[in-house]
Image (tube, rainbow, N blue to C red; front, side, top):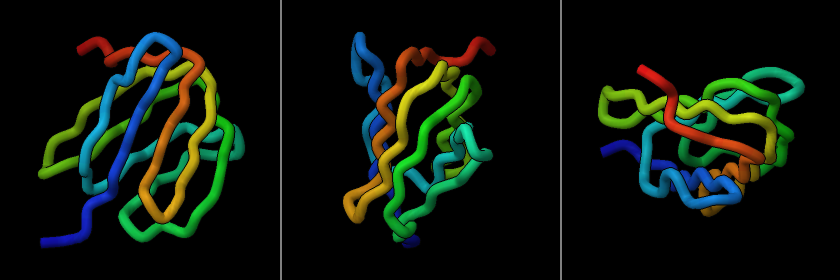
Length: 88
């Protein structure tokens, strides 16, 4: 089994996602980026856009409006100014 990334998406109202995933793609202010398990640590600011959570061949999509992404040895945490599941 491939390594998994621990991912947490938090808005001011609540935690929208927490769990192990294959990959997360996010809309950075300096360009979109993807994070896999073992990624080098970094911090980034987020612009309005979609956070795509990829796991076991499925995608879960959230709309975010600003915030921060923090990649550490423990995983990825996104603290969004606003976040909600994307409309289908």
